[in-house]
Image (cartoon, rainbow, N blue to C red; front, side, top):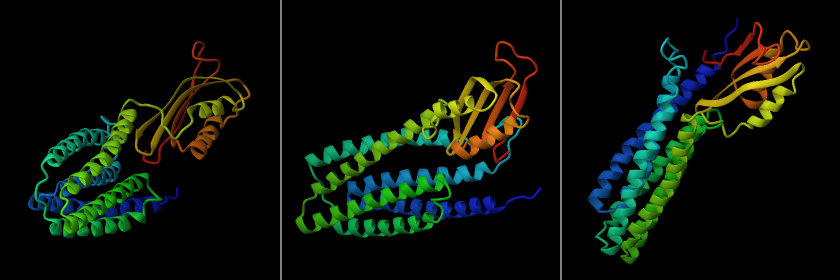
Length: 305
């Protein structure tokens, strides 16, 4: 059997891009934390917290790519891929704490604005903007090939807006002396981070609860199976997500004598083509769950198996 190695090359390329972007982002996040403390800028610290979301997203993406290459074993029949979702939920909870702290600190500073070094803010935020642009260029090559990379690309893109906000605050403070603008920008960045964090937590929880994938119309999928030649009923129909970009489906399908010998493979191929579900398990029954004879099992394995 011939093997297609293009997928392996693509994964390796995405891993390199993600790792480089992770290194750049993590390094500059540390610079922003130090710079925020030295200059007294809450906006810089707020942007550092925002960049922290990027570091976590990139880190999760790198881990997901690397762990996804590990083979399954006797104790983990699906491998380690769900670690990505667990890490996403933990990151979201931590980021809620960071975001709330930033909003509280901004409220305190608005009542008594401290001295802010606008020149230091401007230089650090400017370098941050350059780092974000470089990271975006690195990830742009793989964003259309991988949902994992696309998510990281969007994280970096949104952080670029945060750096731009800090630059605006630094310029306003430098030419007007309005140091309270620093806290206002920090609040804006905090309010930008919190909704994204909630979306991340909501999506992670939905997957952990084995909810149906949002991108798949399960009613339409079930109707498609029921409309197949020879099908009389569909029972125990389940569709869920194992990890980002990997959905699974199981179903008991009652058939009559009109079902073709290659029914399971044909149906599985249609589900892959129309719904993008590469891992399906279809159990055929002659009458239904209550009157089973010798069931036939059909399985369409995922590419990783």
